[in-house]
Image (cartoon, rainbow, N blue to C red; front, side, top):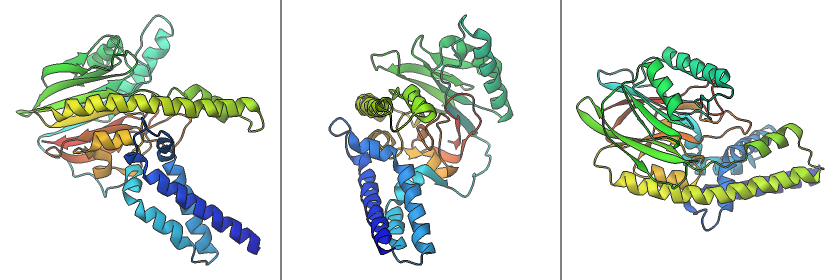
Length: 348
Protein backbone atom coordinates (compact mmCIF):
# COMPACT_ATOMS: atom_id res chain seq x y z
CA UNK A 1 0.00 0.00 0.00
CA UNK A 2 2.85 2.38 0.83
CA UNK A 3 4.33 1.80 -2.62
CA UNK A 4 1.02 2.72 -4.26
CA UNK A 5 0.80 5.92 -2.19
CA UNK A 6 4.30 6.88 -3.28
CA UNK A 7 3.44 6.29 -6.93
CA UNK A 8 0.25 8.37 -6.66
CA UNK A 9 2.14 11.17 -4.91
CA UNK A 10 4.73 11.30 -7.69
CA UNK A 11 1.99 11.31 -10.33
CA UNK A 12 0.41 14.22 -8.47
CA UNK A 13 3.73 16.08 -8.45
CA UNK A 14 4.14 15.47 -12.20
CA UNK A 15 0.61 16.74 -12.81
CA UNK A 16 1.23 19.93 -10.83
CA UNK A 17 4.49 20.56 -12.68
CA UNK A 18 2.73 20.07 -16.05
CA UNK A 19 -0.10 22.39 -14.97
CA UNK A 20 2.37 25.14 -14.09
CA UNK A 21 3.94 24.74 -17.52
CA UNK A 22 0.46 25.17 -19.02
CA UNK A 23 0.13 28.42 -17.04
CA UNK A 24 3.13 29.74 -18.98
CA UNK A 25 1.47 29.08 -22.35
CA UNK A 26 -0.02 32.58 -22.84
CA UNK A 27 3.45 34.10 -22.42
CA UNK A 28 5.35 31.85 -24.86
CA UNK A 29 5.15 32.70 -28.57
CA UNK A 30 4.34 29.50 -30.58
CA UNK A 31 6.50 30.87 -33.41
CA UNK A 32 9.47 30.17 -31.12
CA UNK A 33 8.25 27.23 -29.03
CA UNK A 34 4.90 25.70 -29.93
CA UNK A 35 4.76 22.89 -27.37
CA UNK A 36 3.58 25.28 -24.64
CA UNK A 37 0.51 26.04 -26.74
CA UNK A 38 -0.43 22.35 -26.70
CA UNK A 39 -0.16 22.31 -22.89
CA UNK A 40 -2.37 25.40 -22.69
CA UNK A 41 -5.03 23.67 -24.80
CA UNK A 42 -4.94 20.73 -22.37
CA UNK A 43 -5.65 22.99 -19.38
CA UNK A 44 -9.31 21.91 -18.82
CA UNK A 45 -8.16 18.31 -18.44
CA UNK A 46 -5.28 19.29 -16.18
CA UNK A 47 -7.77 21.22 -14.06
CA UNK A 48 -10.14 18.25 -13.87
CA UNK A 49 -7.32 15.87 -12.90
CA UNK A 50 -6.13 18.25 -10.18
CA UNK A 51 -9.67 18.38 -8.81
CA UNK A 52 -9.79 14.58 -8.75
CA UNK A 53 -6.54 14.51 -6.80
CA UNK A 54 -7.95 17.02 -4.30
CA UNK A 55 -10.99 14.79 -3.77
CA UNK A 56 -8.86 11.64 -3.58
CA UNK A 57 -6.46 12.97 -0.94
CA UNK A 58 -9.30 14.54 1.03
CA UNK A 59 -11.17 11.22 1.04
CA UNK A 60 -8.01 9.45 2.18
CA UNK A 61 -7.62 12.15 4.88
CA UNK A 62 -4.17 13.08 3.64
CA UNK A 63 -2.86 16.63 3.63
CA UNK A 64 -1.49 16.16 0.13
CA UNK A 65 -4.78 17.56 -1.22
CA UNK A 66 -3.40 21.01 -0.40
CA UNK A 67 -0.81 20.84 -3.21
CA UNK A 68 -3.30 20.37 -6.07
CA UNK A 69 -5.69 22.84 -4.43
CA UNK A 70 -2.92 25.44 -4.25
CA UNK A 71 -2.05 24.72 -7.89
CA UNK A 72 -5.65 25.39 -8.94
CA UNK A 73 -5.90 28.60 -6.90
CA UNK A 74 -2.59 29.94 -8.21
CA UNK A 75 -4.03 29.53 -11.71
CA UNK A 76 -7.26 31.34 -10.86
CA UNK A 77 -7.05 33.60 -13.89
CA UNK A 78 -6.87 30.49 -16.09
CA UNK A 79 -9.83 28.93 -14.31
CA UNK A 80 -12.05 31.98 -14.88
CA UNK A 81 -11.20 31.84 -18.59
CA UNK A 82 -12.81 28.42 -18.75
CA UNK A 83 -15.49 28.55 -16.03
CA UNK A 84 -17.76 31.61 -15.83
CA UNK A 85 -18.49 32.76 -12.28
CA UNK A 86 -20.73 35.76 -12.92
CA UNK A 87 -23.78 35.89 -10.62
CA UNK A 88 -26.06 36.87 -13.50
CA UNK A 89 -27.08 39.42 -16.10
CA UNK A 90 -27.32 43.15 -15.37
CA UNK A 91 -30.74 43.35 -17.00
CA UNK A 92 -32.25 45.21 -19.93
CA UNK A 93 -31.61 48.92 -20.51
CA UNK A 94 -33.07 51.47 -22.88
CA UNK A 95 -30.02 51.46 -25.15
CA UNK A 96 -28.87 47.85 -24.83
CA UNK A 97 -28.14 45.77 -27.93
CA UNK A 98 -27.35 42.10 -28.58
CA UNK A 99 -24.33 40.82 -30.50
CA UNK A 100 -23.97 37.19 -31.61
CA UNK A 101 -20.94 35.45 -33.10
CA UNK A 102 -21.23 32.03 -34.72
CA UNK A 103 -19.03 29.77 -36.83
CA UNK A 104 -21.58 28.11 -39.11
CA UNK A 105 -19.19 25.35 -40.21
CA UNK A 106 -20.33 25.92 -43.76
CA UNK A 107 -24.08 25.49 -43.33
CA UNK A 108 -24.61 28.52 -45.53
CA UNK A 109 -22.97 27.15 -48.65
CA UNK A 110 -26.22 26.85 -50.55
CA UNK A 111 -24.91 25.28 -53.74
CA UNK A 112 -26.54 22.63 -55.88
CA UNK A 113 -24.98 19.77 -53.92
CA UNK A 114 -26.98 18.95 -50.78
CA UNK A 115 -28.83 22.25 -51.19
CA UNK A 116 -31.89 21.10 -49.26
CA UNK A 117 -29.75 19.78 -46.42
CA UNK A 118 -27.86 23.05 -46.06
CA UNK A 119 -31.03 25.09 -46.40
CA UNK A 120 -32.67 23.10 -43.61
CA UNK A 121 -29.70 23.87 -41.33
CA UNK A 122 -29.98 27.58 -42.05
CA UNK A 123 -33.74 27.54 -41.41
CA UNK A 124 -33.23 25.77 -38.08
CA UNK A 125 -30.63 28.34 -37.05
CA UNK A 126 -32.85 31.27 -38.07
CA UNK A 127 -35.77 29.86 -36.06
CA UNK A 128 -33.47 29.31 -33.10
CA UNK A 129 -32.24 32.91 -33.14
CA UNK A 130 -35.78 34.22 -33.51
CA UNK A 131 -36.63 32.46 -30.26
CA UNK A 132 -33.66 34.10 -28.53
CA UNK A 133 -35.14 37.57 -29.07
CA UNK A 134 -33.82 40.61 -30.92
CA UNK A 135 -30.35 40.16 -32.43
CA UNK A 136 -28.90 43.53 -33.42
CA UNK A 137 -25.49 42.50 -34.78
CA UNK A 138 -24.62 39.03 -36.08
CA UNK A 139 -21.04 38.04 -36.94
CA UNK A 140 -20.74 34.81 -38.93
CA UNK A 141 -17.73 32.73 -39.89
CA UNK A 142 -17.48 29.96 -42.51
CA UNK A 143 -20.45 31.28 -44.46
CA UNK A 144 -20.65 32.41 -48.07
CA UNK A 145 -22.34 35.55 -49.39
CA UNK A 146 -25.45 33.65 -50.48
CA UNK A 147 -25.93 32.10 -47.07
CA UNK A 148 -25.34 35.46 -45.39
CA UNK A 149 -27.96 37.07 -47.64
CA UNK A 150 -30.46 34.36 -46.72
CA UNK A 151 -29.92 34.95 -42.99
CA UNK A 152 -30.20 38.72 -43.54
CA UNK A 153 -33.53 38.35 -45.32
CA UNK A 154 -35.05 35.90 -42.84
CA UNK A 155 -33.96 37.73 -39.69
CA UNK A 156 -34.73 41.18 -41.04
CA UNK A 157 -31.26 42.69 -40.87
CA UNK A 158 -30.99 45.99 -42.75
CA UNK A 159 -27.26 46.13 -43.40
CA UNK A 160 -24.53 43.66 -44.32
CA UNK A 161 -20.80 43.63 -44.87
CA UNK A 162 -19.57 40.57 -46.74
CA UNK A 163 -16.77 39.95 -49.25
CA UNK A 164 -17.17 37.10 -51.69
CA UNK A 165 -15.12 33.98 -50.90
CA UNK A 166 -13.85 35.37 -47.59
CA UNK A 167 -16.16 33.29 -45.37
CA UNK A 168 -16.92 35.96 -42.75
CA UNK A 169 -19.65 38.57 -42.61
CA UNK A 170 -21.29 41.17 -40.38
CA UNK A 171 -25.07 41.67 -40.33
CA UNK A 172 -26.57 44.67 -38.55
CA UNK A 173 -29.86 46.29 -37.64
CA UNK A 174 -27.94 49.56 -37.23
CA UNK A 175 -26.43 51.65 -40.06
CA UNK A 176 -23.00 50.59 -41.29
CA UNK A 177 -20.92 53.70 -42.02
CA UNK A 178 -17.65 52.22 -43.25
CA UNK A 179 -16.27 48.75 -43.91
CA UNK A 180 -12.99 47.02 -44.58
CA UNK A 181 -10.85 43.94 -44.21
CA UNK A 182 -7.71 42.89 -42.38
CA UNK A 183 -5.92 41.05 -45.18
CA UNK A 184 -4.67 37.53 -44.42
CA UNK A 185 -3.78 36.73 -48.07
CA UNK A 186 -5.92 33.59 -47.94
CA UNK A 187 -9.52 32.61 -48.64
CA UNK A 188 -9.65 30.03 -45.89
CA UNK A 189 -9.56 32.61 -43.10
CA UNK A 190 -10.41 36.27 -42.88
CA UNK A 191 -11.23 39.27 -40.73
CA UNK A 192 -13.82 41.86 -41.78
CA UNK A 193 -14.68 45.04 -39.89
CA UNK A 194 -17.50 47.56 -39.97
CA UNK A 195 -18.07 50.91 -38.27
CA UNK A 196 -21.64 50.76 -36.99
CA UNK A 197 -23.70 53.68 -35.68
CA UNK A 198 -25.56 52.65 -32.52
CA UNK A 199 -27.66 55.12 -30.54
CA UNK A 200 -25.68 58.11 -31.90
CA UNK A 201 -22.35 56.47 -31.12
CA UNK A 202 -20.02 54.60 -33.46
CA UNK A 203 -18.51 51.18 -32.68
CA UNK A 204 -16.07 49.20 -34.82
CA UNK A 205 -17.13 45.54 -35.03
CA UNK A 206 -14.84 42.75 -36.24
CA UNK A 207 -15.82 39.30 -37.49
CA UNK A 208 -12.73 37.13 -37.24
CA UNK A 209 -11.81 33.59 -38.24
CA UNK A 210 -8.22 32.56 -37.54
CA UNK A 211 -6.46 29.57 -39.11
CA UNK A 212 -8.14 26.24 -38.31
CA UNK A 213 -6.17 23.35 -36.82
CA UNK A 214 -7.49 21.02 -39.55
CA UNK A 215 -7.43 17.99 -37.27
CA UNK A 216 -11.15 17.20 -36.99
CA UNK A 217 -11.07 14.21 -39.35
CA UNK A 218 -8.07 12.60 -37.66
CA UNK A 219 -9.45 13.29 -34.20
CA UNK A 220 -12.81 11.74 -35.00
CA UNK A 221 -11.09 8.69 -36.46
CA UNK A 222 -9.02 8.24 -33.29
CA UNK A 223 -12.01 8.73 -31.00
CA UNK A 224 -14.23 6.43 -33.04
CA UNK A 225 -11.86 3.72 -34.24
CA UNK A 226 -8.50 4.37 -32.57
CA UNK A 227 -6.55 1.57 -30.93
CA UNK A 228 -3.40 2.52 -28.99
CA UNK A 229 -1.88 -0.81 -29.99
CA UNK A 230 -2.01 0.07 -33.68
CA UNK A 231 0.69 2.06 -35.44
CA UNK A 232 -1.91 3.98 -37.51
CA UNK A 233 -3.39 5.48 -34.33
CA UNK A 234 -0.02 6.82 -33.19
CA UNK A 235 0.65 8.13 -36.70
CA UNK A 236 -2.62 10.07 -36.52
CA UNK A 237 -1.76 11.41 -33.06
CA UNK A 238 1.65 12.55 -34.31
CA UNK A 239 -0.06 14.19 -37.31
CA UNK A 240 -2.49 16.06 -35.04
CA UNK A 241 0.33 17.50 -32.93
CA UNK A 242 2.26 18.44 -36.04
CA UNK A 243 -0.68 20.29 -37.59
CA UNK A 244 -1.47 22.03 -34.30
CA UNK A 245 2.09 23.30 -33.97
CA UNK A 246 2.15 24.48 -37.60
CA UNK A 247 -1.23 26.23 -37.55
CA UNK A 248 -0.59 27.87 -34.16
CA UNK A 249 2.30 29.78 -35.73
CA UNK A 250 0.06 31.01 -38.56
CA UNK A 251 -2.58 32.17 -36.06
CA UNK A 252 0.04 34.28 -34.29
CA UNK A 253 0.89 36.01 -37.57
CA UNK A 254 -2.80 36.64 -38.33
CA UNK A 255 -3.52 37.85 -34.79
CA UNK A 256 -0.67 40.35 -34.99
CA UNK A 257 -2.29 41.94 -38.04
CA UNK A 258 -5.67 42.13 -36.27
CA UNK A 259 -4.07 43.54 -33.12
CA UNK A 260 -2.30 46.28 -35.08
CA UNK A 261 -5.52 47.19 -36.90
CA UNK A 262 -7.80 47.39 -33.85
CA UNK A 263 -5.23 49.46 -31.93
CA UNK A 264 -5.62 52.08 -34.66
CA UNK A 265 -9.43 52.15 -34.42
CA UNK A 266 -10.84 55.63 -33.74
CA UNK A 267 -13.85 54.01 -32.06
CA UNK A 268 -14.53 51.51 -29.26
CA UNK A 269 -14.13 47.95 -30.51
CA UNK A 270 -16.16 44.74 -30.39
CA UNK A 271 -14.06 41.79 -31.55
CA UNK A 272 -16.08 38.66 -32.43
CA UNK A 273 -15.10 35.35 -33.86
CA UNK A 274 -13.47 31.97 -33.89
CA UNK A 275 -9.87 32.29 -32.69
CA UNK A 276 -9.23 28.51 -32.83
CA UNK A 277 -7.30 29.12 -29.60
CA UNK A 278 -8.21 28.68 -25.94
CA UNK A 279 -7.90 31.38 -23.24
CA UNK A 280 -4.63 29.72 -22.20
CA UNK A 281 -2.96 30.75 -25.46
CA UNK A 282 -0.55 33.39 -26.66
CA UNK A 283 -3.01 34.51 -29.37
CA UNK A 284 -5.84 35.02 -26.87
CA UNK A 285 -3.57 37.02 -24.55
CA UNK A 286 -2.45 39.19 -27.47
CA UNK A 287 -5.97 39.95 -28.73
CA UNK A 288 -7.62 40.36 -25.32
CA UNK A 289 -5.01 42.81 -24.05
CA UNK A 290 -6.74 46.16 -23.40
CA UNK A 291 -10.09 44.50 -24.22
CA UNK A 292 -12.53 42.73 -21.91
CA UNK A 293 -13.65 39.14 -22.33
CA UNK A 294 -17.43 39.22 -22.08
CA UNK A 295 -17.55 35.62 -20.85
CA UNK A 296 -15.18 36.39 -17.98
CA UNK A 297 -17.27 39.43 -17.11
CA UNK A 298 -20.79 38.01 -17.36
CA UNK A 299 -20.61 34.33 -18.30
CA UNK A 300 -21.66 31.48 -16.04
CA UNK A 301 -20.80 27.78 -16.12
CA UNK A 302 -18.49 25.77 -18.37
CA UNK A 303 -17.33 27.95 -21.24
CA UNK A 304 -17.04 25.32 -23.97
CA UNK A 305 -17.96 26.76 -27.39
CA UNK A 306 -16.83 23.87 -29.58
CA UNK A 307 -19.57 21.31 -30.22
CA UNK A 308 -17.41 18.76 -32.06
CA UNK A 309 -15.80 15.55 -30.81
CA UNK A 310 -13.01 17.37 -28.96
CA UNK A 311 -14.58 18.39 -25.63
CA UNK A 312 -14.03 21.35 -23.30
CA UNK A 313 -12.72 23.90 -25.82
CA UNK A 314 -13.55 27.60 -25.60
CA UNK A 315 -12.39 29.05 -28.91
CA UNK A 316 -15.21 31.48 -29.86
CA UNK A 317 -15.19 34.92 -28.26
CA UNK A 318 -16.76 38.34 -27.99
CA UNK A 319 -14.24 40.87 -26.65
CA UNK A 320 -14.94 44.57 -26.20
CA UNK A 321 -13.37 47.90 -25.28
CA UNK A 322 -13.73 48.96 -21.62
CA UNK A 323 -15.90 51.91 -22.69
CA UNK A 324 -18.69 49.51 -23.69
CA UNK A 325 -20.71 48.20 -20.75
CA UNK A 326 -21.27 44.43 -20.69
CA UNK A 327 -24.70 43.39 -19.42
CA UNK A 328 -24.81 39.67 -20.15
CA UNK A 329 -23.06 36.80 -21.92
CA UNK A 330 -24.48 33.44 -22.95
CA UNK A 331 -23.20 30.44 -24.86
CA UNK A 332 -26.26 29.17 -26.72
CA UNK A 333 -25.90 25.42 -26.24
CA UNK A 334 -27.90 24.18 -29.19
CA UNK A 335 -26.14 22.37 -32.02
CA UNK A 336 -26.37 23.98 -35.46
CA UNK A 337 -22.74 23.36 -36.44
CA UNK A 338 -19.62 22.14 -34.67
CA UNK A 339 -19.59 25.44 -32.76
CA UNK A 340 -22.07 27.03 -30.37
CA UNK A 341 -23.27 30.61 -30.93
CA UNK A 342 -22.10 33.14 -28.34
CA UNK A 343 -24.32 36.10 -27.45
CA UNK A 344 -23.48 39.23 -25.46
CA UNK A 345 -25.74 42.09 -24.43
CA UNK A 346 -24.05 45.53 -24.41
CA UNK A 347 -24.91 49.07 -23.44
CA UNK A 348 -23.07 52.13 -24.73
